[in-house]
Amino acid sequence: MSTVAEQLRHAREAQGLSLRDLADLTKIRSDHLEALEQANYAPFPAPVYIRGSVRTCASFLKLDVQSVLDALDAELANSPEFREPPSLTGERRGPLDWITYQLSRINWRLTLIVVTLLTLLAGGSLGWKAWSQRSQEDPLSRLGPGLYRGPAPAESDVLAIPTLPPPATNPPSRR
Image (cartoon, rainbow, N blue to C red; front, side):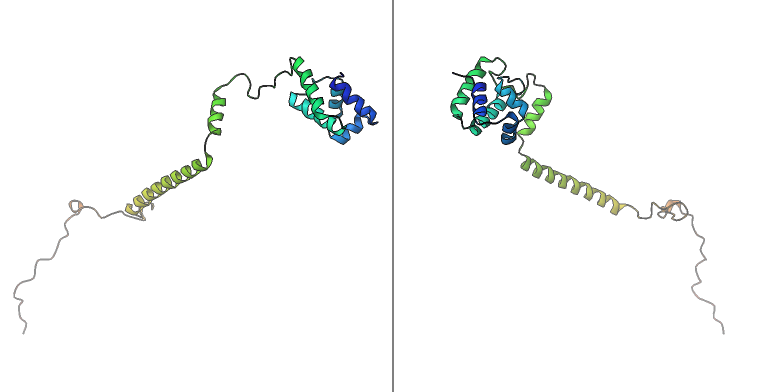
């Protein structure tokens, strides 16, 4: 049985297509097609890209797609590099990974509603406090010196004003 690379190359040549023609028709890079026909899977970052490219080529070249993919799976199983898919999360997990995971589990609609209500409550409370303080404050207290004298002094701070003696009870008559 021939390899996947040989099957793809023979089918392409049988249809009289060059690698450039096949690349233009399938929208797969020509260097990737050349690597597939040489069974060199190093340019591909993961097996999923190899499978997708082989599926597209086999379908376009009118090959039995399932048998070609089965042969590809057998070839990739012999390769230690592509035997298993690469890890998507990496080896180490740090605090940033944990935080990101926790943030992904949050119900953002509910959180937005709660944060909005708390913001409105805090803003209303601060507004009420500022308004009540302002209404108790003397509105002219911020004027500069000489423009405003302030509240009247207490009775103990006021000097007595001399007054006239009280009038006599019987005023003298004038005739």
